[in-house]
Image 1: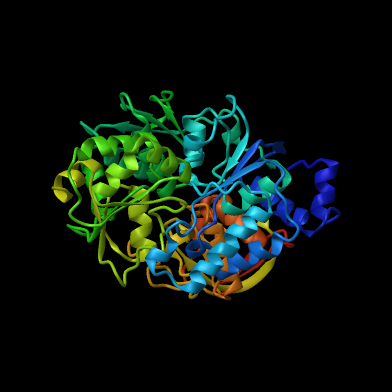
Image 2 (image 1 turned 120 degrees about the horizontal axis):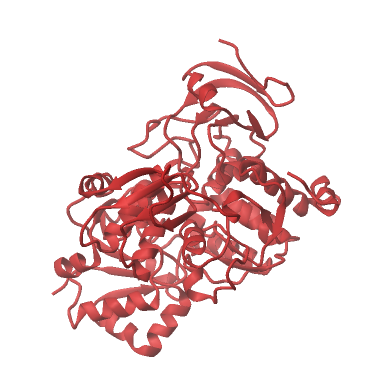
Length: 384
Length: 129
C-alpha cells in the first residue's frame, strides 16, 4: 500500500505512539483488503463498548490510550452493557458497573459522541451519497453500503478506532464498484422480519465481500435492518445489491428448506422465559408498529425492549413509552439484546426473540437457549 | 502468500475448515471454542498455530484476539485462506504473526503438524514434522 510522506512518518512513530499504533492497524487492514492507499473519511462508528465483549484487556487498553488519543472526525459508538438510567434495577456486579463506566469515560475523553447505538443510520443524518465512512458495527456497515449510499469497509473494532484517530481508512474494492460473484434468490413466500434475518444469515454464510439478492419484492425498513443484522453475524459480507447480477454470477436459492436449516441451527428451545426485542436496536417506526400490534394486550412474561436513547425520548413524547410499560415492557436504551449482561444463564434458561443476531450471540456468548419467532407470533403467543 | 503481520513462531497446527467468529465463540480466558456447531468445539487454540479460512461476524472479535493475547491464551500465529479486517487488526494490535496462504497451501496443512513460521524468510512456512 502506498503511503504519503506524512503517513510514513506516523507509521515510523514520529507523531507519537498512538498514531504509530493507528497506522500499524491501518496498514495491516489495508493489506488485508488489497487497498492501494488510504482515503479520508468523514464519520467513524466504533464497536467494542460493552465490557462483556471487550473484557479487562479492552478496558485497560482504552483507559491507557484515552490519555492521549483524540478522534479527528465525527465518531459515534455502539451500545454498552446497561442503561445508565436504570442500571441499579438489574443487580449487576459492582466490578461490571465500574469497568463499564471506565470504558464510557475513555471514549468520551477521546471525543466520541456517546450515542450507544448499533443503528447510527437511523438516529443521525445520513451524509451525501458516496461519502466515505468507517463503520465497525457489522449491521450498520452493511446498511450504510447497501441502503444509505455510503462507502465503508466492514471495519473491525480496531480499524474503525484507528480511522477515527487518523481520519483515514483503507481504500478497498468495497469502497469502489464492487461486483458480487454470487446471487441469492429469495424463494420464501410471505416473508416477515424473521425470514429476512434468516435470509441475511444465509447470505452471509455463502457470500464473500458482497452478494446480489433477487426476488425480494418490496422490503421495508425493519426487514432491511433484520437482513443486515443476520448477514453481519454469519459472514464477511459488507454489502448487498438488489438483482440477479450478471450471467456469470453463481446462483443459490434461499428456499423453505434452507430457511428451515437456519431456523434449526439457531432455535434451541420451544419456549422462552422472557422476550427480548432489539438487536439491532429498535427504531421509532418499529416501536410504533409494536404499539399498534399490542392494541391493549399485555405480555404474560417479561419483555425487554432495546432502543437508542434518542428513540426512547421520542417514544416518550409521543406516548408510546406509557403504552409499552402498560403492556409490561421494560424499555432500555444505551444497550442491546446482543451479548447483554442483563441476561445470564444463571437466571434464565431460554429467551424468545425475533432477532437473528441477538439469537446467535445470546446462545453462543451468554449460553442461554433461544426460541426464535416473528414479532406477530410473539404477540399472538405471549400476550393476552 | 501474503504477510499481514510480521513475526516468527514455531508450534503445532490447530486447523479448522470452518471460519471463526471470535466474538462470543472464543473464551477470552481459556482460548477454548464454545460454539457447539463449530468444528473446533471444546478445543483450545492457546499456543497453537491456528489455521482457519477467515474470521467472520462481529467486528468486536478484534478485541477478543487482543484479550486472549493479554490473557496468554492466544495462538502464537495465525494462517488464513482469506484476509478479513477483524483478524488483521486484532493480530496487528496484539503482534500475532498473520499470513494469508493460497487455497492449495491451506489444504495441505494438517492438524497436529509441527511447523515453523518466520516472515523474514522467502518461504515463511516450513513443516518440521
